[in-house]
Length: 79
Image (cartoon, rainbow, N blue to C red; front, side, top):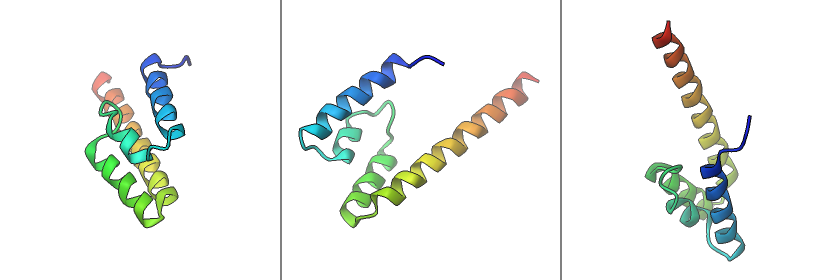
């Protein structure tokens, strides 16, 4: 599957922000098409509390679960 140009652009912008010293939650906070306010706040809490790896894992698991649910609903609606 090919790359999504919009996601690639977000990744490049966030990488530039991180390299320049910006925090992950601040960089994600400007990318509202991909990161909702709850996710941004969780990233901030994880960063400040030293639990960023656990928060990232949880966010990834939630996103995967949401994707699977969307796929299931789409297949049921198509049926």
